Amino acid sequence: MPVTKSVLKNVRQNAKRRAVNKARKSRLKTEIAKFTAAAKKDKAKLYPAVQAMIDKTAREGVIHRNKASRLKAKLASQIT
Image (tube, rainbow, N blue to C red; front, side, top):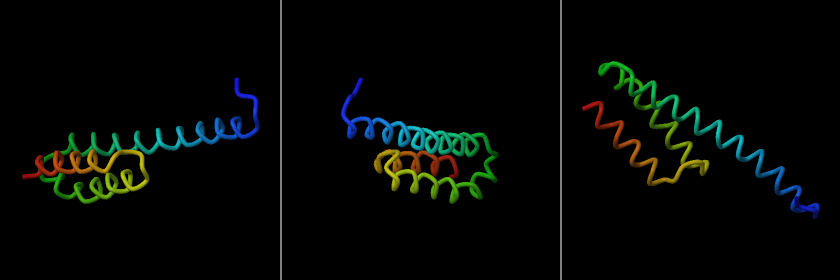
């Protein structure tokens, strides 16, 4: 168990950040699943919102920008 004050603070910060990142990633996965399950005509309407969410998640550092790019390409291929 950590002893110093700074390490205890780091443990608290890491726990809070982990919870926030987990929630953001979960929300992203839910939106991607909704997009994938949607009908073909609805996907065109949903894509801009899902793309924005992917970009925001990457900007926040939850996922890597290359993963964001891969996800967007994968989802865009389902539209055409």
